[in-house]
Structures are given as structure tokens and as C-alpha cells.
Image (tube, rainbow, N blue to C red):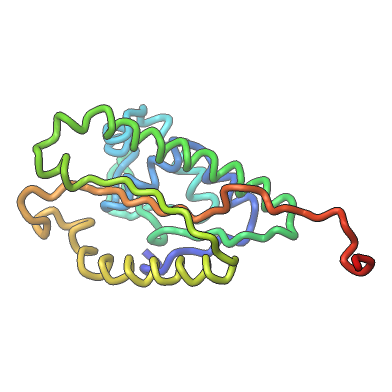
Length: 204
């Protein structure tokens, strides 16, 4: 890979290239290391033909690349970067529409996995059932205060990432009983801003 730093997306076409459940599933599968289309298909429940098509589309926009070392059609693929970010650009309507489309696909995937755990939670060992959590908090914040909260969260996650990162691709580094755990964090206003119809320059 080019590096461990997430890739910052700058083109709406890159967002649209990611906005497909199979491509997101492939990106997640490749997070554990290189895979052929056949191996990836077995992991995500798709045919190798489908995976080959979507891998080529991801490669077209620089998200994956051939890892080398394959034989014939059994060509391993790998991520070019560990993750990506797509900063908001409210002044760009095309970017905003593409970002919203991608966010909807991502949210569907997150909710689907969370719902699956809720349905299956009682089948887990008691320690896992008790350790899993869901919390909701409501604060009255300014945009700057929310940005401060997000920065603190990212700093916390960075520390745990450094501590556990080797386990991502090295199964022998994982302690007995370790499972892949997904953590989600969202920060958003729950109501649209109130817009006054009074011109402040004329209000007495």
C-alpha cells in the first residue's frame, strides 16, 4: 500500500465509484490482506465474476491495485490505502449529492450489521452479550464544540489503532477469544436550524 494514512477524496466520481454495496464489501475484505476475486467472493457471498468486475472499477479510481504473485486469472488484489475520507464541501452541489448517496449506502450497511447483532445477541457467550453496548447522548453544542468532540474521539481511536493494528492482518497476533468488533460514531444535529424571517437590520 502507498501508506497507512487514509486517502482524502477530491472528485465526486470517486465517491460514486464507492457507492455500491459490493465494492464497499470488497474494500472491507481486502482490509485483512490481498485476495483474489474468487477468495473475496467466498468471503462476501458474491461470484468471482461479480467481484472481478467491481475490483476493476475500484482499481480504475485508485482504491485497489493488483498485488502481484498471481497465476493466470488468479490475480490477488490489495488496497492502495488504509481507508479514506471525504470532507464536506457544501458549496459544491455535485460533490454533496455524491456524498449523500455514499452515506446512504454506508448507513444501510451499518444498520444491517447492527440489527443482525441485536437479533443474534443472545447466542453469544455471556461476556460478549454484556460487553456489547449502545449509547445515545444529546448535547446542545456549537459547530466548533462538535468539531472539538470529534477531534477528541479521533485521538482516542488513534491510540487504540496503534495498539491493535497488528491484529488486523496477523491472526497469530490476536489473543484467544478475540472477535472483529465494529465501533460506530455519529455526530449530527437532530433538528434543522431555525431560520428567522425577521431582518435583523430592521428589528428594533
